[in-house]
Length: 180
Image 1 (spheres, rainbow, N blue to C red):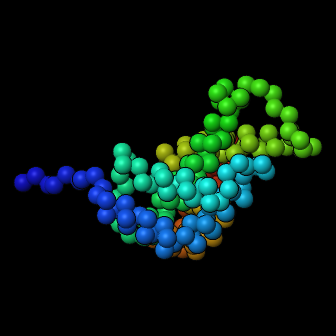
Image 2 (cartoon, one colour; image 1 turned 60 degrees about the vertical axis):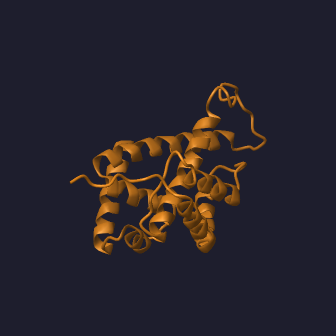
Image 3 (cartoon, one colour; image 1 turned 60 degrees about the horizontal axis):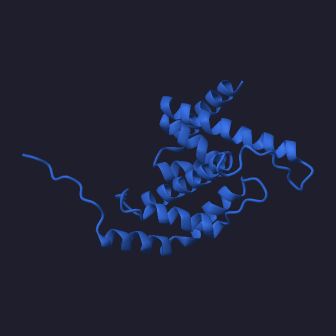
């Protein structure tokens, strides 16, 4: 007997996503603000813009996203927000965006900002390598970097606090060793 194949989202799925956005806007806003706070000054994307971009990606018909519940939706939306910021950072370094030009900012700490930008990209690449080794540990490290506590991460990932702390310790140690 063949199992039924998953279908693409129906309009009601989009209505469900829109409803969750409205119901959980405060949580989305808090998560977006936390992520934007880690960006370099002069970021052209504000908190509402980041939420809007994430919602647009969630509603893309060519990439249907079945969600188990509102919590799964929220975790996915926060993850997409992070990818929006990463994509924007990568785009800024492309030739099309003027990445080949030597940009001179109107601030004194240019070298520090550029170093920070490079460090963020390096850490992101190392997190991707860690995910290949242990995806859960990479997610815990990512969430800790976004400002979540161990208890909040344990709740989000539906893990015990002690296991989440073990994943954090492993992921942090792995990341520190790989960055050495």
